[in-house]
Length: 122
Length: 282
Image (cartoon, rainbow over all chains, first blue to last red; front, side, top):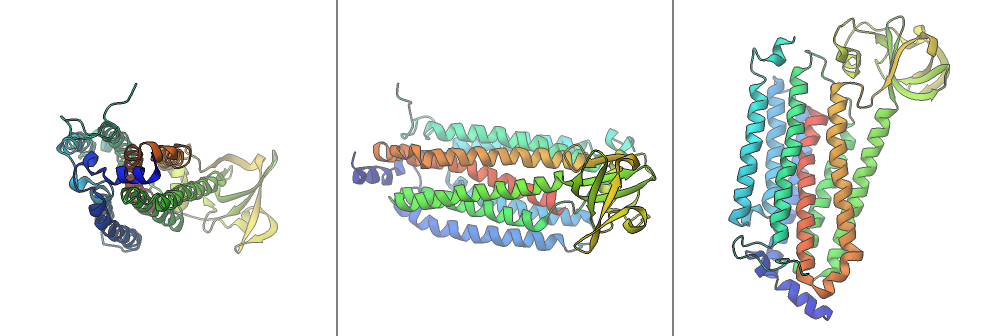
């Protein structure tokens, strides 16, 4: 297959992805990728600067850092990983993952309740 | 035998098979790192009050590594977009930058690791603690370049972590290096190197994963993440160099390979977005 034919076939790959991944859409998406890139850089700098601010309670510092991290992670997942425009099967799969991950964190935090073993040992 | 659905979507899923496969794999990865984050929370909250170390890691280096990974993430997605726009030349440039970013990340990480393995805490028999970088070590003595406020009386605590890097960060009674040790006369950064005879040492240990629970979870999390960076970079490099001939025979499948390896790479970046503040800043 000639290189030209190869390129044409790749460009027509929209049907493989099925939704919004044709050459024109991708060309427009590049601008979004660069905006997300800028947002991630700014988010990183803000995270570092915020860590030097004393918000009065360590919990607030942790909350601010995790909030920025969640925003950054959401941008990566939504735009770089194309989750903003994906098939239902992937959403269902990730929904199940989110359920088990939340359960894991729930049990982790549950074990930190006052009176639990982890506190009694002190 | 041809592998089915490498480019055309399956009727029932609406996706080519590799995409379902990588997302299933990433789901298992979420639970793997989730379990380690859960361990981190339990270890941190379970540590005795005031003993969890802060400031052990180099924040500027961690920040640079975060920026490096973000750059690599955007070059991966731009590489995939270039193929979609029939620009194989641009794709090659973007993915080369991605691989270089991965190498830079691993270089910086190994530099940080080396720093920890050269960083020693020495508890002397008289109870003083010398904390600093190892200059020389023989069977008879250690020569240490002490860190600021790093030579002090050992905390009288029953908690093991209190004898670790956590103790070094606390403000407790100190004994100056000049009065307690034999100075070598060498100067670096305003502090003298100190020579400590092995016969005077109760315990000497570097800041490896065995030093305290913080460093144990730090090395576990960042080590596993670094293995992911290495694995992802090797796959991207394989597709970029020997695997590139597929672009001429089956370009759509080749583009899908870039998307799949890219999804893995973005996940690696995503994990680091959480690791950085949790380990370096909080």
